[in-house]
Length: 179
Ligand SMILES: Cc1cc2nc3c(=O)[nH]c(=O)nc-3n(C[C@H](O)[C@H](O)[C@H](O)COP(=O)(O)O)c2cc1C
Image (cartoon, rainbow, N blue to C red; front, side):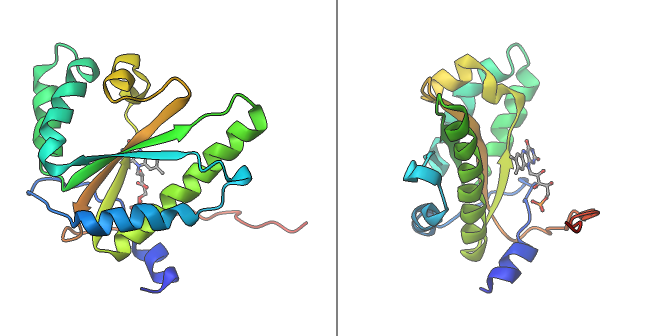
């Protein structure tokens, strides 16, 4: 697939109403290839945890009791949505106590994530990066094994590409000004 085409046509897939399956081998290949992302100091500040399809229900139960305490309906709808996915990735970034290096890590992580989403799109795997408030919850972080010097950047939902993927229009106003 042409790079320009992948950039233009990749969309966040947000419908998880039907049971979806993905090719885990293609997923693992994309995870490795995406690591060609630029990262200053070659710190490679990314780490991924793969929640395979058969573990999605367990993972939902593990986090839901902290993410949605006493909200049984939300726990159930989270379970129903994520168990239909083809899998999920926990997106984890290594922080750095130095301000400059920490900022570089955030940028490098974004570059890695875009590489990954484009490569997965090329491989026929749809994605949506989810960053709900509970990614900051210490109990959610703990149950997911996120270390003290890491941030949980979100969840990458993995789906197939059969759903309609309407393009969210970009404003692209004042993108360029002359020096
Ligand atoms: C860092 C980041 C966090 C995001 N968090 C969410 C989220 O919590 N929920 C969601 O539905 N989409 C989330 N998205 C997806 C964006 O909303 C999506 O990219 C945007 O709607 C544009 O759509 P497109 O990816 O189809 O072009 C996130 C994207 C990024 C890059």
